[in-house]
Length: 282
Image (cartoon, rainbow, N blue to C red):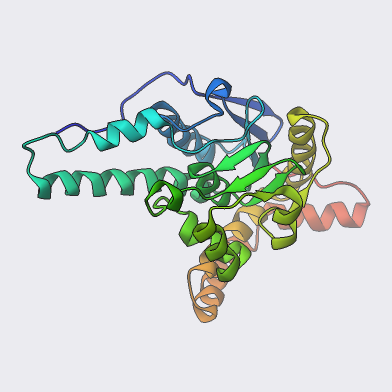
């Protein structure tokens, strides 16, 4: 039985990573396909965000798409591969077990973006549909333009979205809005996305690079803050989303019991008393 083998080693070809101080910018590099997620791009997303998470010099990540669009969802060639995973004569039970494992693996790719211990800021231009929206809602902050178009197209394609958007989107925009987007599959433009809380800001930008530059400026401001405090804050918010208030309070007490007394705290207090910007170690 065939598989998509997302763990096969490969030299990155479908995305690029650049560094500017503590800010890493990751670009999806399939503009000819509106950055649709093919097998290579899925694999490289996981590998890249795993590496960025482990790099102490990376304090913030900006995620963007090359060309006119952020991401047009899963690539049709990959859908065809998935449909071919159960050839004639195959045991249906084993075929469906393999499909479940694949779905779980694709979910884990996007969870790798969410798990990255530093803030991930998405600069979203053009279309952000299907799996592209799954990717966007796995990020911490999202920025769009008035012309950005968000939509969940899965129901119109005869399936239920299965790699994270139905679980994360309601916690961002509320259950009612998430249901309406998922059921109707209608387009949501940048200004409405800002109103409903799907994006943090709708940015007037003449071109995609203007949007990316705006988000990178925000990223540089975040990168100047205490890396330890930023990582602890991200972890606490994500943890609290999925647990009770009591559990969240216990978690942050444990975190600060280990991380509150730090060189970052000393530097923050010293810099404030000296009237200068703090300088934190990686």
